[in-house]
Image (cartoon, rainbow, N blue to C red; front, side):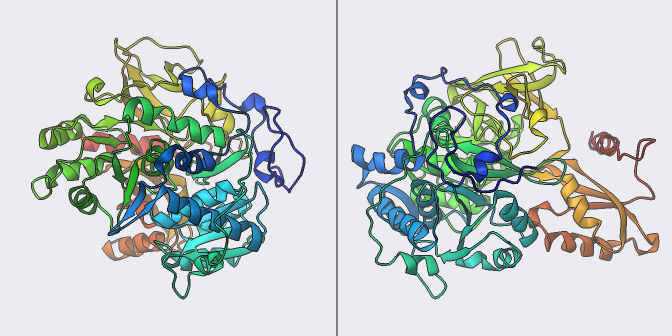
Length: 562
């Protein structure tokens, strides 16, 4: 891999001089010939972007200038922030990064928190200061954080006081991390809130960094089938593009909307849906403590939420809760993270009268690219390519297949895959098209229907989980000699993580060891990745050369479920 050492006076691919002094991320971009073709002609907003553009300024400063300053932008329990208040706090935080932490433009800042107003303020502070956001899932453990710190070359980390332990463990092994500051949910301070204390007395005026539209704004990590997360690079232009496609033409957000949801901001579905999209249109976001369908449904009922973003499994549970909560304010639900089953769509419609929007997106593409507005939804189908994007179903040779024929989904538009110096770039991008790894087919009207995943990714309750990553952890246990991890069909979660394990001593098989192994995984990586089912076997299916054949295990599980 490239070293990515700091270099200066670089120019981005478009030829416009970069504002970034630290070009670590730019140096790790894939070669131009390995990147997809970009198309900005799909909607009129995309062709109006200037060569220099800062997404933080566009979504915050310019919204205040347009007259939204006094309106609420973020809510948490009984408190709210206006656009003006968010702008002033973000500016003070940006000054902390620049003046106290020596952030230079292009520097990477790791963010670690649940969805809270303060996390949003930090996110905007980084962009406005010219830095690059590396937002992480709250459930990640120290070993996962260590990889991200190293891979992204993070020099500054901002962390919620409630999530300090794992990050401190990771920070202790990082050669690049120089500053670790803490904050609280609503910037209320506290003994550990070193970021708020540093911001006290800072001016709320800020000279925003005039970044190039093609300067890096975000590094988002997504798990892959090899077990190592892939860092995906997105520009300021990309962030603006997703706000001008799905929410404008499908979600149709208005300033009166109050939007909520469950996906973390580290998950680009959540970043767009519950933060960037509302702000593009002067709407507001309702964050909430707690987790799960009941917490979300209660939030909708108590605070008159109008739009909600979450996974299909949550919508299915919400349908069963409608008798307990008042959902009369809700006008729209957007489902993503996994395919929306027809039965879930129908159950939610019967319970609420709302036609859910199914959305297909990916971290590589930043957000949704196939979907349909409620009046155009066809139950059992994901939808069509949204305005701004093209989508086709291809065969292995890159030729489009007829309707009704399964094939590889290929997508093209204003965003696209840019892995950080990763050989898997050529798997995702072929002949200018992005291949997300899904098998789809179309009907005669051009609607796309999901068939299956084309790789070993496990999709469970909206989470993308890498089987090989879990295998790597299990193999660290002294009792495990071999293992294979796959997704087993499950009616509630779409799939559950299931591990097939060969033990060193088969006499130790049993419930006690199963729980030990499950806890072993939970304590080393994010708990949602642990194997909910473990089956002990004498041997695993392999090729003549010793390569593990996971597909045979999946076939056996699928035959059992049918």
